[in-house]
Length: 201
Image (cartoon, rainbow, N blue to C red; front, top):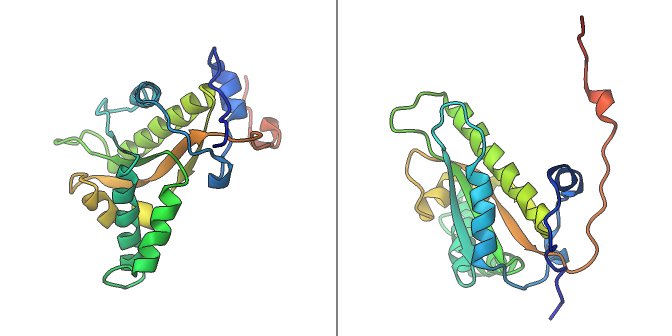
């Protein structure tokens, strides 16, 4: 079994977590599980995202262990539907299951509008995206790798329905979490000053 990178004794500070967060591809993860307390900490971080209408629209479905099979099957079915097929082949279903087994934790995200909406739907979707960013940064602060995915099957309405999200919710994608088995991926950004216009007195 691959030895995971241990969680830091003290979490990274906010600015360090922002700078050091990277997309970690599935082959770079170890299969070691993530304990429920850590997952609860990450979900609590997500729960403090900003949103204009104070509707807290973010909704999550967490898949670990054998629960990942339910997610894999929903994704395989959604992919087939998006291709005009009634259902996936057994081979396609098993391929999807193998992919879900590559990360110990998967989280599907949706935006759930209020019963009496005060804000347009896009505001609720943006708020849910902010919740995802909170979760990704908290994961990096605690030494966990992650990747945010917004592909066709993860955002297909069938996936949301199959996983029990309400009819009026909007699927926004999914993410996975895991211990990094080796070196953290390197990354770079162009200078922020090249992307900013200043207007002063």
